[in-house]
Length: 293
Image (cartoon, rainbow, N blue to C red; front, side):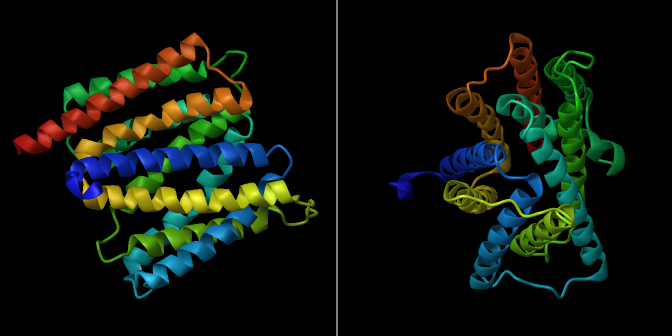
């Protein structure tokens, strides 16, 4: 069946799978967080993900530590941002509706484009600049500063977006000689150590069979999501499949409603729609610019 599909069609299916796995993972983490402390979630999932990634990287011959000093500095910087992202994102996830935090995260392509222009010297025309500005308007409709729902969790979500932007910019600066699986393994391992640090002085809370099952599922889902994301880039054109990343918001709306009985307000949906439209325009405009150069 897949043999008759074009590379971009295969890439599209992989991107759809990646977004589904990421969002289902977030749903399971949110469920586990009802009974298990954050530091235990981070630690246990970090151990499982590290073991799985280590085995995969070794099997694929993609585990390399003979990196240049510059690349090691970038890898360590990425690990540091990954630890901070994990803390702020999961803290927000455990307190915010699933669709709301997913909608905030849809700002990432826009913030990366903006910061690449500001700090890396990449050219961004007035059309994409306008789309980025509209995206920020949409984000304000989602978070509504000063509103009743605006609190620490919302700030955590915004900090997660800022740190994810920094992480992606750091990753862009790595040389092609750095295997993606090596970076991901080191990131997962550092997050595991960070979880242990968060739990310093805390008592281990008993974890039941249901929680162990959910935590195991999150580790597998994260691995599958990562593999699909990597294969997407290798199989299809990024400009052709990238717009499908917004299907993660559809999954978040569906799972938030089915699992938690959550459904966002009209203003949140409007803001999310503006952010998605701005992001799609930015991606399509980048593709047009690339084709004309």
